Image 1 (spheres, rainbow, N blue to C red):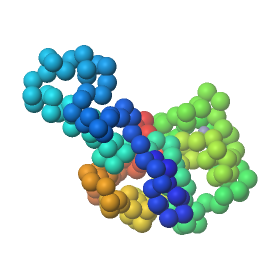
Image 2 (image 1 turned 180 degrees about the horizontal axis):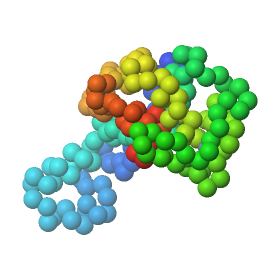
Image 3 (image 1 turned 45 degrees about the vertical axis):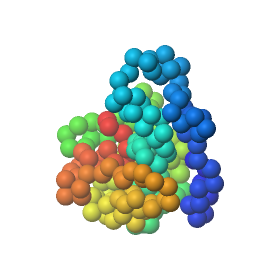
Image 4 (image 1 turned 30 degrees about the horizontal axis):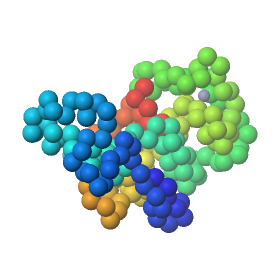
Length: 185
Ligand SMILES: [Zn+2]
């Protein structure tokens, strides 16, 4: 998907494997072609529906570390961090949350002292877990709401999937930690 970041306009959107719009009932992959005659009608219909599916609109996808930008933005807005304060954070290779020690992806050579900007460049897990803890669940959810993650975009294409988030009241320290860096650690 190519989007104009200034206003959210979708400039282009494509999925793969694609299919020939002139032959929407023809299987689109070698595997499906090979198996086609052995499928019963119900499986053929399911396969075609899967083929027609607009994945960019109808499927959900874990954002991974890109979600650290959301944690960072909320933290900046709440003034609990700054962009370039030298040594504001110190990655020791892990952080403890609710009795469990969570590793930074670079635990074997911790990032050490770093500013927020450097933590984003390093995609340093402990920094964003720590910021998530400072924000707290309620503030965090306020920002999820403000960013629009808790509702559909209303894109004018059919079949838009909603997002998958726990309800705020179900989120404890462990879930908040996972949301802050979007990793099921
Ligand atoms: Zn780190």
